[in-house]
Image (cartoon, rainbow, N blue to C red):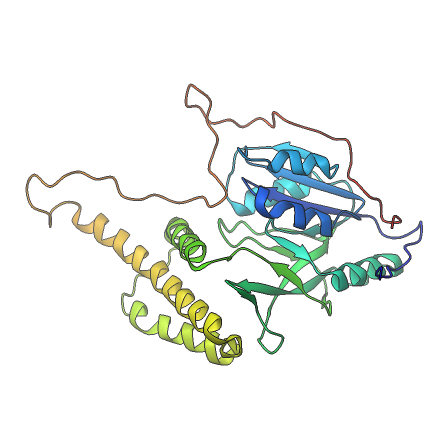
Amino acid sequence: MTRSRPTVSAGATKLSAFVITRDNADTLEACLRSIAWADEIVVLDSFSHDDTLAIARRFGCRVHQHAFQGFGAQKQMALELTSHPWALLLDADEMLSPELEDEIRALLASGPRAAGYEMARREQLFWRMTGRGVRWNYYLRLFDKRRGRLSTDPIHAAPAVDGPVSRLRHPFYHFGEHDIHAKVEKINGYSTGLVEDEIRSGGRRIPFIMVFYPPWYFFRSYVLKRAFLDGWAGFISSAVMSFYAFLKYAKRYERSQFERHGRALLPDGAPRVERSKSVEPIGGPETTNEGRPVHEANADDATGCGARSGSA
C-alpha cells in the first residue's frame, strides 16, 4: 500500500536541505532518499574517495567540495551555499522517518510560524533502535536561515536561531553507531578533537572530575534517560558514553601534564613518539601532491536537486 503524502501547494515555503560528507557511501543514499522531495539539496564534500559523489549526483544534488575545517565551519559553509530561506540540516548517517517527512511538508505548505523546529533523534544502538520509552534527544535542524547560523563548535556544531523554537512530533533516525567498534572509534576521535577547544575556551583542569563525572553520566543515561529500556544495548551504550565523558577530561589533563613536565619524567634515551593530534572524523584537509592544503571547491555540479516539493 502506497503511503499518502500531503499535498503541497505552489505557494509553499521553499526548502533547501544540506549535508556535509566525507566517505559516506554506506549511509548517504538512505539520507538523500528521505529528503529527495526538497526544493534543493546541497552536498558539501571533503574530498571523498568512495562513491559519495556519485550517489549525491545521482540524486541531483548541488555538489561542492572543500577541505574539512571543523564541523561548525563546514556546516556553516554548506548553509551559505543554499538558495532558499528555510533550511534542513541532516548528517550523512541520518534520515527522516516517513512520518517526519509528511509533518515537515505539511508545515511548509501551511507556512512555518516559529524561527526553527527541533526534532527528536532515534538512535541505532548496535543491533537495534532505541525504544519509544527512552528519552530521545531533540535537535534543532529545520530553521529560517535568515534568523540563524551554525555554532562554531569543532565537533558538536548545531544551529541557533533568533526567535521562537517549536518541536515537531515525529523522529528522525541516526545510523552512526552500527557496532561497538564504530562507537568507540568515534568517541576516541571526538574526545581528542575536543582537547584543543577546551584549551581555547579556558576549560578547567580539575582532575577529580574524571572520578565523579563519568559515573554521573552513566546514571543520567541509563536511569534518568531510561536507556535500561533498551536492554543490554542500552547498558553498553551508556557505559561507552560514560567512558567518553572520562576521555574528554583525561585527555585534557594529560595535555596539561605534557606541557608541565615535557620529557622530564621519562628515562634518558626514551624514544620520541609523536603524540596523537586532533582527529577529524569525516576527514581532514585534503592535500595536493606537493602537500599543500586544497581550499578550492574543485568540483561543482549546480544542476539542482531531484524531486520538487510537489512531486509524488
